[in-house]
Image 1 (tube, rainbow, N blue to C red):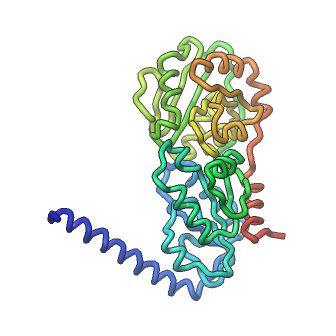
Image 2: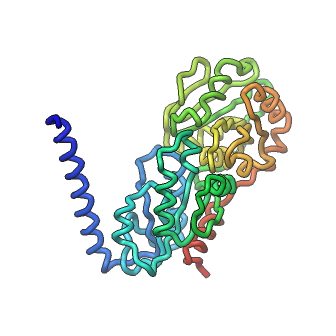
Length: 336
């Protein structure tokens, strides 16, 4: 083995020892603590994608109700635990979990379908679910049925969609009339995975009618654009401001179980042109129109413009309060 390889291996081993030492320290401290709910999830600093955004909104809602939430630890007096997909330390939960704790597993994906390749993550999630979970929360009916189609049976499944923070994502007080100007389209993604809509965005970049429409993309672009206006990642408040300054949302992602960006756009009053895939149809309902290929978008966009008032009126998104109620019920923490 090379010196460099030995150093890397020693570093990994050292990192594992540090993690185990921290977990043992947390275990000792947790014997004296208590919270209403433990959340196991590794948050990334904002701006970040949908899972982080939703869980932050959920925690804010729960804390506003006086529910105490501890992060990545499970104290002796804590009755319930919510763990998120594969985005947490399995070994840490295994060390801290107790038989009397109700553990609910929030599941994404299937990851292999969403990413377009199978690296074993779904099987790992299923193993964790079998080992720990009392119940499983899927974010859409699509996600539940796709797991079942792949033979991934998870414990006591429930479908609870995501929701957004209404203090941030809400319609504007007034809108600029469409007459005499271009229709403003917007799309967003925090991942540069090509399945987030690269093919559709490339088609729009080449073929969108520039006399009638302009398109803005916010987030991490899956490729370079020649005509689409690209805005890099911005925080939630910035995203909401951008959404409120536009007319229609384009949701081009494929096999997306519950797109938070789509929910945020709808909450800001934007009807959507959405790829007929994943959980999009469940989220949009009558507040938009589907397409299956870029070539269909001119017709879909023109129809949405003609029906924009009716489509805006049909927008109905889950409230964070209602979603929090359902999470509390699943966790056995429903308030009177």
